[in-house]
Image 1 (cartoon, rainbow, N blue to C red):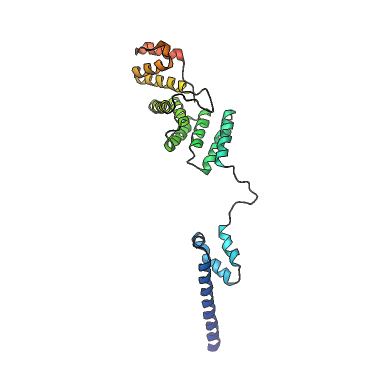
Image 2: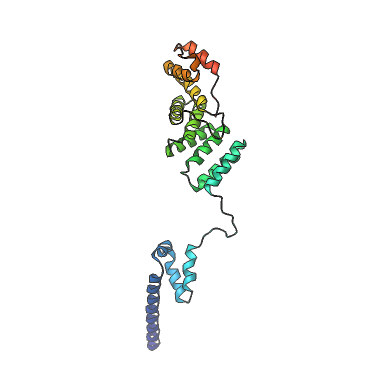
Length: 242
């Protein structure tokens, strides 16, 4: 019994030493990045190697993609943005919104997809969500004229006049001759008219008159009298809705 135990123990010791040598060899063979990636499975991998699993098969398991080989990968974000604008210009604002969201799923910092989503939501009359999307786009790139124009109109629709005034002023500073590429009815003229109305609403009649001078240079200089300003604004009509 003791002899048998000694033999078994000796065999076990040799087996353990052999496993340690194999483990050491594998650790040297497996790249460091793979050991980090597969940290939780290194022990299991080594045990499989001891009983004869080929090294390439054991190593390959961790790095395999979970994507179904038959699954079609999504289009690139830039292509999704183009699809979004095509849908937007066709008047399919729900499809446009979905395309921009899909683009953002790939890159949340894609500024154009952010304000594209905002414009789509605005056309769907979801002004709160549209305003949030425009604000995100502006936080990523304050020089994004389309985001500033969209926010000016959306904030005005929400009654957030201070925000609307700030966005309108930013847009007119960035692009005095602005025309929205995806709806030519949205122009610097419309944004300036909106700003004149916002100035009038805030009681800044001199600033409102200055914008009217630019809109109607033939009638300049405009009076700062509230009643006369109101008549002039009424003559020009209301600014466009988002």
